[in-house]
Image (cartoon, rainbow, N blue to C red; front, side, top):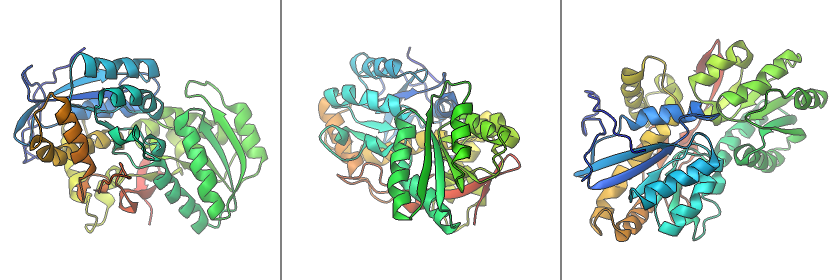
Length: 386
């Protein structure tokens, strides 16, 4: 269903008034697919909320946004992108929220030559680059980049062994693959590797095997509120060692559901989550604070999450790419979609809420170590680590 989102006024964004609600004759059509319901809703809800804050004009052109909910379901995600392409004739798609759905959406995007700016994390969406993946870009940090931060932190703490419990889907297993590769480089040995489903009600068996392996630390490679289940089970079984989580938990729903059971969790996150704690020298601090103020003005104090910021950053990327595409073709045409793909690929040194982005023909993420910081959960709050 096509969604018209009401105008939202804010004095913060000088570039344009923030709203969506453009008429059917809008010059540029942007499809957005998020997991607003289902197990990944803690990712998709802040993205859906952020969609209501996007600018109604870009590069001097009106913009229409069509927002669809894939309900955290792969089949629905495919149906959504086909609707956006075949019925709505969008120029670009932003989303979806999760890696499995993003992988499933790739074929329709490639077949129609429609550029996609994904909100999912897995590096496998864009690497190794080939004729299919050249249509896919992403704003979240690659799992390889964030896994590197985790392994570096473990090495600095003289960790020798790690046990992993990961989602059985592509997100969790991509993390396992990256941890296997990177930990070997630091002489950190993986002594146990367990999997679970995001809908599981218990992980007791897996946790018993993790604890029995007597690791120095445990990594939970999960996302959103399903990441709380292993943390709770570990505490119930008396595990006292450090627990690492991934950037897939970087929102307040994880803190709310986890409570005391996730206190002490060590997490790699994007700078926006702790924007007020960043040094003034951090190039993303101002943009991150601006986004935080705009979002919390609309949805309440403490409501901001990195997942919404990924959609905000997708909009910044699109704004940077549009002038080059508009110089070559008219929106609503195949030629424009091709021009937009090419223009996105040539965006350089774009400061976003999560770092600085420079796309290339072989790198459709464009982020480096400036896009990550390490935090710890301290008394139910995110605290920037030194």
